[in-house]
Amino acid sequence: MMRKEDTYQSSIFLVRKYFYSRINQAIELAKLDREDVVLDVGCGFGYLIKKIASKVKLCIGVDADISQVNQQVRKMSNVKLVKTDVRDLSLDIVPTKIFCVSVLEHIPEKDLEHMVSNIKKMMQKRGNLIVGLPTENIIYSFARKLIRKRKPEDHVSHQHVVHLILKKYFSLETRKTIPFNFPSFLSLYLIEKYSSFDKKKGQENL
Picture 1 (cartoon, rainbow, N blue to C red):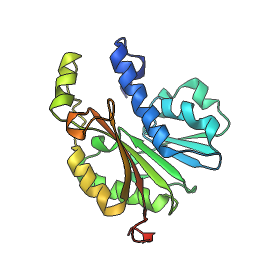
Picture 2: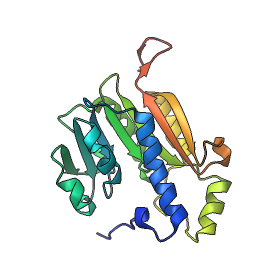
Picture 3: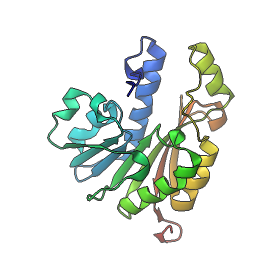
């Protein structure tokens, strides 16, 4: 298996800043506490886990290739790493917070609804799902041209498709955009906090 490019260690300062700002915003939206059991879907190199492990009870990182996870993360006593296809997750632990940062756009549309439905089944009823997605708008395309990076070929599900499926299973609570919380059409990236509990209806959003 080819090793992924570690964009958090990019030689381009703005690229590094962009990638770290995504996980920082995701963590801020999650409002973590000491009793949280966190699932990081598609944990990659483990940068998000490294930032939050000391703040939560347990952190589970799931990826198809856990060999790339940082050694410092591997040694953390409250971190559990699981090698599996993220499209068909199955855990014996019920997470209170689930992160899917830069994951869902990589899932083929035919598998996407199954995965989102499965995430809801796993999550605690009053838990939260934190999703990160590229806008893939004109601004996003222009930014990629500036740094001479093509859109990844494995970005197979556009954010509009992802949002249609998420809305079937979750209620959107909060959205932040990168950079500077600009309107979505002027932004590069979306960070969103979802709940399976509809506060307006006062019941679980089925």
